[in-house]
Image (cartoon, rainbow, N blue to C red; front, side, top):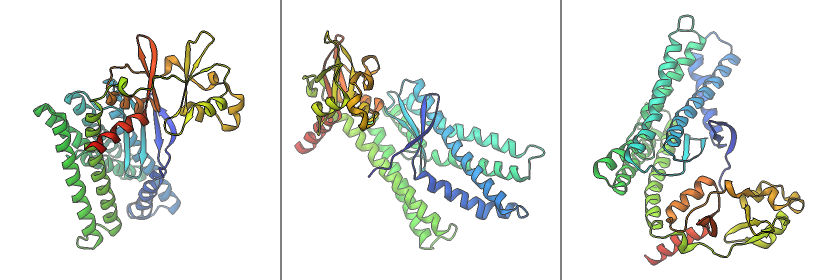
Length: 377
């Protein structure tokens, strides 16, 4: 079962989300700071102050991670690459960029700006820590911690293994030298897997007390991070293979041409009851008396209406208007269709030819193409 992300606010139109697993990491940082680091540095301070300072420090550090990821996202948007959200989770933060870069320079710029931002933040925090009146004081200790953590964040992310920023820089460099995106992804992914296995091995040795530089909890953390890197690197390579397979097909090859149209007087309950398909979900196009398409009603739109109001809510009240619906042409490949579906968070994508909706392609039909390809090999 997937753990749901929760949107907390937006920055520059980009939703900022937290995954509940992030709370464990925040608690870990607060425990280390409030229970160990700050009591040693601030011996005469009361416990309530130490724990409060630890909580503020933890929140500011994760705010730094958001700024790091925001830098990635804003550069990606500058190059026309959609960003779904920024999510904080157990292992840090991630920008949900829904489309791969089309040129090595774009990949390089989007990747390198994150660590550079962390280094800039580190410089700001060390400047604050050295400010007269703050240096050596209670708040100065917090700024010193934030300096160290932002430097660490920048350095760790420069490690040359996918999906870390350094791995993306490596892919961009290899891609630029060889001109081969597939080979570049393979190299960066393999480096990511090697890095993941190295961290898992280190964590195991620490946990078994072979190395005593870290405690056993840190050893378990290394193993967890290594598992994440290995899995993410494998997924990156799998994604390349999936997109290459999908580029062999056009939307016209798999689209459904029978358009499920409903009059604008139809309720959400009626539309769901008539057009919901367990394999393809809900997709209905709302039309007026002249058969002009007004908008689309899918699972996403229906889910925004409480079920108890489906019987009294008319389709036009719930639909996404035609002008706001992501569409695609019949000659576009399925890799592009899948990226657009991910970007728009739609399960179906209307296919438009010469200004007319001629069909629609669903995520399920794309998955069926992949399943058929795998069965044939």
